[in-house]
Image (cartoon, rainbow, N blue to C red):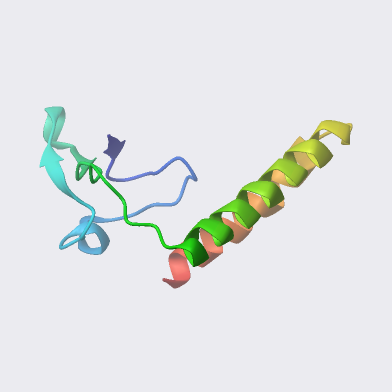
Length: 93
């Protein structure tokens, strides 16, 4: 459950962007706040071989990145640009 005003990336998202979402809804919480509640995940996924291959490639890339991250003396230097890039992409959509 994510608070409406700020997601883990620190990007402010209002109810207009969430209203009508195909993946969840906003619900009232305490003190007039609202929270995003995601829809339940499907019990079964139909994955074709092309999608499975793409997921495998992505998983391998994330593992490689994690390995490289282990060798960086100060990994926090990498986080700020990534957060900025993600914030920019989210605000453009």
